[in-house]
Length: 248
Ligand code: FES
Image (cartoon, rainbow, N blue to C red; front, side):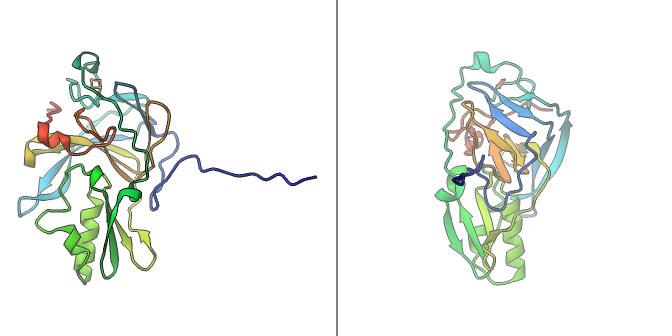
């Protein structure tokens, strides 16, 4: 009998260094409507708190929201019950069309070479959390010799809400990522007087309204002001429009 050749295609694209969340936890973008979140991941508001130089220093935990299987989170910026959808998108007239950029993030990244680490950076995914430029600049830190600079580079990268930045160990050529439980974090950014995106951590799969999955990444930021030109991902537009989610 002729041998049967089986070719296996990976079901999803997973970024190197990402540990995917359990398959039951995923986010569907609905057409012209909210995010439909499956699997009850943690839902916790976080504030970007300043460091001693007045720049982004750390995330402080805020309000915990009850998470449910199949919950709808606002992505139009008009809900009065944020982070949840209250149906306001039906009247708001916000254009929620996805940019449908399914290209893996690294394909659009530039590389900065340091003595022990490599930094990769894709500016199109900037969520403007500003940990990369908080008195020190990650693009300089990665090029400097010494443990202190390595640790600072890792700190800045790991706090990058959108995952625009990755830091790689130069010996192993693997990203230095921290696996964490799946969670969704609506960001508040009092330093610039606005609310930010939904930071999504822990390898949560995001599926477009037509059923195609985006690359699964450890750190992502989803637009919730309705203004990003890279939907469903944040591109920092909330900072220009001073998006306010109205959460007390
Ligand atoms: S997406 Fe429904 S209120 Fe914003």
